[in-house]
Length: 86
Image (tube, rainbow, N blue to C red):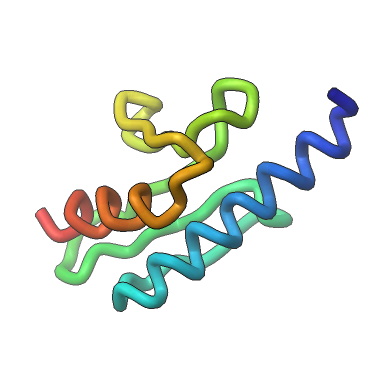
């Protein structure tokens, strides 16, 4: 896959995840030319950085210990919303 096309697909996946999180009432902000998503916790605490990794196949966070398939942005948003709420 062309690097630029892969990068565009990753950015689009993060935009979609941000939109899904926003509909759940979670504050999420795209950063660094849409290469990362900063997800804020509802209470004081460190935000969570989300990236697209594993060759564009997964959203990943918590130093890649947590991940969810990019083809399921809605499911990823639900998992992340629960994760930042803890």
